[in-house]
Image (tube, rainbow, N blue to C red; front, side):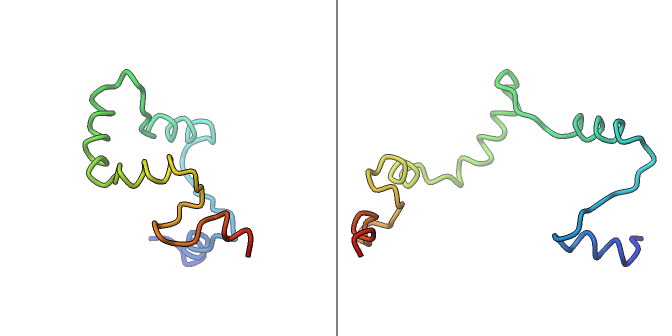
Length: 88
């Protein structure tokens, strides 16, 4: 069970968080590095799995509209344009 002061440290973003482990700093960092999943263009299975997971949530029409528009403010259609806003 976490000590009360550790719970405060973990929930308060203004304090640095430290974790006590039974390994050296180098060993702990190596374990974190080895555990962190990484994408590699040659890892077709992992990339395909990620694409299949996220693709249903991506609105490609909206993404294209926002990235191909000459109005970089990303406004919804019919709202004030960036150029008009600058004149106000």
